[in-house]
Length: 236
Ligand code: ATP
Image: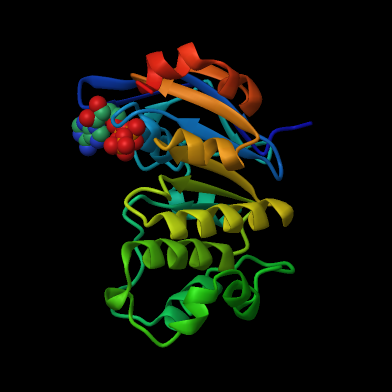
């Protein structure tokens, strides 16, 4: 099967410091791939390099069979690649409903499975606070809103950067349900996570990144069976 997202030989640097070395990974339609690694391993930089937000080189960087190397980020988004950054980036002066409306305006052509009411069904806590401004929401609620807003754009794949970070356990569970619902709808997810147990609960495949290098790529069951790998790369 042709991968939705195909990354081969990706390297990136900040100034003279190289932080990614020859990263290769593939994301297939409807699949959840977890990019697992410690703080500073290079997860965020990998996502940003895919989106053209940091300067990078790659042998191949393709989405839906088309090269996205050097494309402006908004053009990549328009092809159907959504992004939820670690810092969430919702509009704090706007209400929940207004934030979703901004997402709808960015919607691509074609039938979208994600209406506002469907999203409110999936995110009941957002439905309850539909008139509330972003600034009055907790970190976890803002994270949910950022995901819902991105889904409003009707993406084929989403890059999700550390969605469980700094979030109450009950919301982390709800987040797992939401990711399963995206997958059921055929949306592929590249999930960056330090929380390997959360990643293992929802990921089909794991890629373990350490000091900017992929140390392991394979089925989640193989990652789970390899205690030595986890101890060495994650310190757990
Ligand atoms: P985190 O859990 O902190 O998000 P990460 O795995 O996402 O970790 P990155 O943020 O991609 O890691 O960082 C990879 C490396 O690049 C780290 O050594 C980090 O210090 C460095 N780095 C990240 N951003 C910059 C920057 N803007 N300028 C210089 N170095 C950076």
